[in-house]
Image (tube, rainbow, N blue to C red; front, side, top):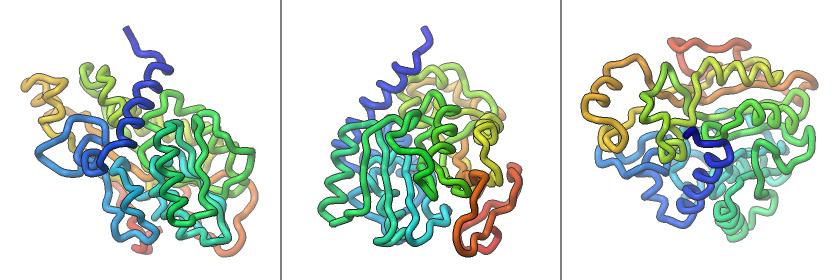
Length: 299
């Protein structure tokens, strides 16, 4: 029997409530914080935040798959919304960029994550960072509030991604933009992986094909779609073996299907942001195109 959208949301909510209460090193050692601990590698999807200004170790649960705030072109005084804010790390990095005159709003639908994030903000006196409990398919935010939206490995956990992109368009000011890191597919996953609820909460089986993902962003009215960074994701055998036989693992390794992380930029048509704004290449970058690293000048 196919799992319903509401059942998938409850799977994610329970798993991330559990993660909010455990040691972050356990999260980082698993598949996006949700799968069985791998003995082959320590971090499967996460990027290293430790050298990013604004990084807060206590708020880093090792659940991301990129560094969207580093690519987000956040400016002093901006209003930034972080979708799926967890314990608050991306919000605190964004706050460093907005300065005291800006504002950051984190949205998460897990009560335990909100509580942890609020505590992390309170002990640091971050009065311009606010955490709101809610569903990113129906954000507790007014229209045209944000200059920038960021998100780190969260949309793949949401069944109705089309609605999320519509909501991002709603809350962004005209001329605003998003930078989102997420897990996407090239090809089709084996049936046993697609049906694994645990791997849905682990950011794998909730992923959709890259072409479909980009099409949903374009359908919501966004323009200047640009892949800012991409990397292949390797799932170790000790995780795959929970769902696939040795022969099925070999077929998966030798097949054309693969999983990757991308960081996607796109802007909302309309008004212009104040000051000099360097727009990225207004096209969708192909798979074999060079990726844009922060500070490289290639953008």
